[in-house]
Length: 300
Ligand code: HEM
Ligand SMILES: [Ca+2]
Ligand SMILES: [Ca+2]
View 1 (spheres, rainbow, N blue to C red):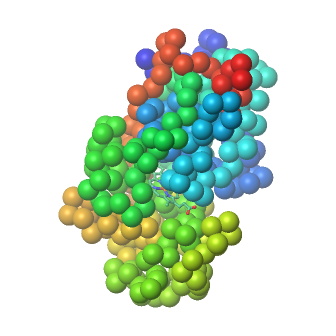
View 2 (view 1 turned 60 degrees about the horizontal axis):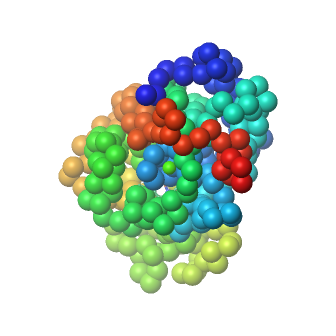
């Protein structure tokens, strides 16, 4: 069972140390906070919030990080800075899975989002599920129907799904994920002036996948988690096909409109949704392990 303040007795400073590390990393590299939010999505959707995402390839492990859906994910190298600080205080006590969850929680707060109360006590997987990533994580051009059912499958309702996509109010999208909406002809659902801007940022239909050509998701408040995302998508300035569909599907539009109108309502729903996502199918008790290094299984 996950519980509030799971580490009170075993490592009373754990949450404080994590928060401090997230803060320090944010001050050095602001986009680390953004990465922690995406990590929560990519870890928790695949089986469980169990840090299966953090294992690196080698010794029989094929990392989820190498899956096509993980394209653009960054800052993995900083996770162990957080872990090491916690290990120093309490060795082999705090899981990498809880670090994924709590760093996302603290990252959200650093990015001006809500303060979220989160349970802890997750344990770490003994596998990375690279071949299952595509099954659990929707693609950017999937239909809204399949997106909603992927979230439904882990207990995230439609209103919460709409709120979670508000994470696209920060961060970036690489041209690789956009050019299909720009070339050979511009997707007619795109706002024309925004399409012109996107074409300036992504001038060729085949961007070099290794180059860092990208567009910020939210030009107005790129480092703040707020309801600006919903205002953008209602103006058809959403970058991904899923963003556009969210603003047009009859099941999601009422929530999109309400979130665009009311930032407080967005923050409440976003908090509720992050908790739902973070509690997907945790490993507890004697399942899994507490990794020493988030990139490797113990003893490897
Ligand atoms: C249908 C669901 C989703 C799809 C298809 C999707 C897809 C994507 C794609 C394609 C990118 C851009 C990657 C790149 O080109 O660099 C992205 C970025 C991002 N996504 Fe999502 N996403 C979804 C839901 C979520 C959720 C639920 C969250 C978190 C709660 C999230 C958080 C982020 C963040 C923070 C970024 C920016 C990352 C960065 O700048 O480093 N996404 N997403
Ligand atoms: Ca996982
Ligand atoms: Ca924003």
